[in-house]
Image 1 (cartoon, rainbow, N blue to C red):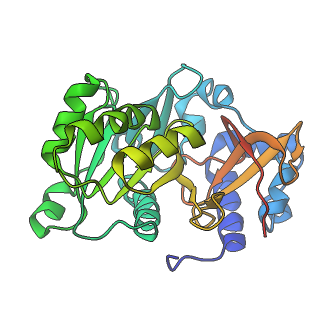
Image 2: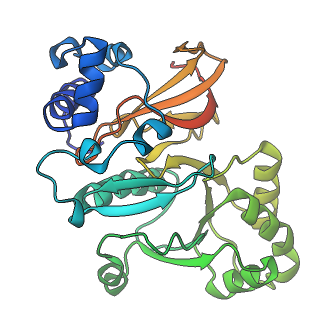
Length: 296
């Protein structure tokens, strides 16, 4: 873990900040008849209503960004997600790098090493994205946390040949694309060493897809569950196969018909970001469905 305050302290600080400086959430609190002092822990967040992507999309920018934050200096990303409707994600450069550190920590837990070359098979993003200053050149010059990206929309044969040439230690990307590449890999890799570990995310990776990737690449496959809004939410447990929640970054609820789902029940994924202050996400519905695991 990072040296942050506990989750309870994080929740209290977040709601006080959102109530005092973010117009949208102040209205949410007042309409629900809730004061920041009423929320002392994660469970108390249930006093607030769930916000959808549509709710935030329909609000003016001034309602969503904390008072005093220069919106022109925020990182800006557009994501369509599962709805197909564009959603704008805003945060400071510090927040962006911090959230990436949570992902990097999970990758280290699952086998990524400091001098590995990681290759990501992913989309190039929306041209209007305003991204943070890259640390890539510094990392490359030091030979640490090296990474490259190839466009997942290119023909599968071309992608496979590029990956053979690049010989990544770690491979990451959408499971649909990586499954297709894995089916070709044994026949065309021609003695090229396999990646040591494969990370997937952004889509559902079924057990059958994961099995094909393990066979094709000869490497373990781990799912990293995240969102553009809050980056990493959870990662595959190497013992149970369920997911560990990144609980020092987010609070994750699984709601079924508005109530907390029981273990084994499926429901809507609702998240609260503990490190999103410039434009907070409190009880925010991702539009995803998940099955509640056993908390033990």
